[in-house]
Length: 147
Image (cartoon, rainbow, N blue to C red):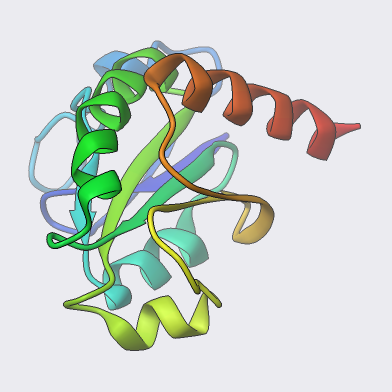
């Protein structure tokens, strides 16, 4: 059984392993659970995702609007979402709007990617990457964490 938070209403949803997760809808609001692009979250919403997501990974891009490398990486992160979902949920945390959350995550430079599995940090990577690099890094980090 997998469990994740709805991006639209923040309800926690359970999904059986045998079902096509890409077609899953929220039991509360009816929105699709996977939308094929990263979801903007607040620090509080990120905490809820970390607490309640089980059976799939969370990939968080910590960024800021004034950051050139962050803006360069944004379309690549978007492309990576289409390739990694529904096994990985991609989230974006604006460090300028959420400095406390970024500090709690010990982010010292941006862009920074943080990969969580069942609420625990399994990998971190600073610096801009292409979509191919994001996908490869994520898959390699998840394989290493599972070993």
